[in-house]
Amino acid sequence: MPTNLMMTQIPDEPVLYIVLGLCLITLLVLILPFIVKKVEENLELFFLIMGICAVTVSGLWSWELVIDALKAPVVIGSVPVGIFQVVLVFGLLIHFYNRQFCRGILTIASKLGWRWFTFLLILVLGLLCSLVSIIVGAVLLSEIIAALPLHKKEKIKFAVVACFALGLGAVLTPVGEPLSTILVGKLAGPPFHADFFWPLKEFGLYIIPGVFFISLFGAFYIGRGIDLKHFSHEVEYSEKVSTVVLRAIRVFFFVAALVLLGEGMRPLIVWYIVHVPAWILYWINMVSAILDNATLTAMEIGPTMQLPQILGIIMGLLIAGGMLIPGNIPNIVAAGRLKISMKEWAVIGVPIGLVVMAAYFLILLPSFLNLAG
Image 1 (cartoon, rainbow, N blue to C red):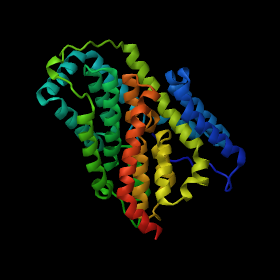
Image 2 (image 1 turned 60 degrees about the vertical axis):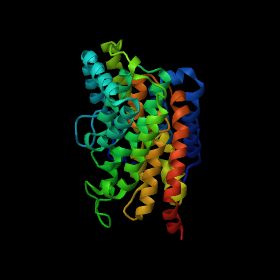
Image 3 (image 1 turned 45 degrees about the vertical axis):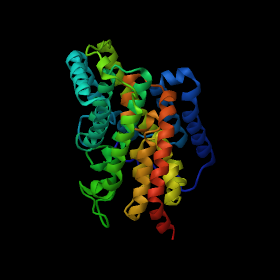
């Protein structure tokens, strides 16, 4: 995801046809993947088309935007290694060493026991993402889940729950994900003087327990009744090299599409979203389920805000990002590797996301009330 924000001029006042056009695109994005099978099967192409439409309606095309959309999947910040390369390289490594990888994962699961294995895997990857980047964590998670001899339904549960944890944990340092990089960059000056450890100091009290409880929930929710004695240590691996390469290409276009969609929706954000109270913005940020949360962070966060406002905005973005496939990098990677449809993800992700959103809202409510007062 891009760590810079396009600065193409937006009219000071709302333009009716732009508002109506972007609202229509938003509805199409939220509805069509659930009711049209062709859209569901070609989600990357659909989002690319919607992104192109959004930028066209907004009139925000520029060479800088095109370059940024093409660079986003292959460059993270100033590092020339992005999600496309990681997905491709890890996929090829697993392809050629799948027997050893699968045996290792199943041996660890057997020794730890299913619940401990599930709990520790989600917890460790969720917190480790802040140090090794969410991309690496997402690819590892996807390949581990793929190696487990679980039914499709249980793999979907595993992926959705774990991706919530990864999405939360990665924000603790600027290395973890673009959202955190932008956050630190926007608040580097006075009064916050944000540095590398600023997200950990200010968000750790909320993020680390959240990752812990999601991991605990996963240990009891995923694969209930699994008997590890029946685990076969010989898992059939059927992916071709061409499938691995195609998956990386699809991820490339998905990330590029989200850059375009996020930029195209910028007029709505500037005209409406950034002006609402913090507690309402917390819920409005559920749009992070379909939009790039890094772009939303760049739009909404500023040094003139108070810390409770920033906390509410970021928590809303992070939690909602787990609800649907486009909401976060781990979701995209896991859905592509495990062949999870938008509908299959939403059936599990939306209820979990709403419960977690409500729980954090109650935790943050005193801060919101103080701001209102």
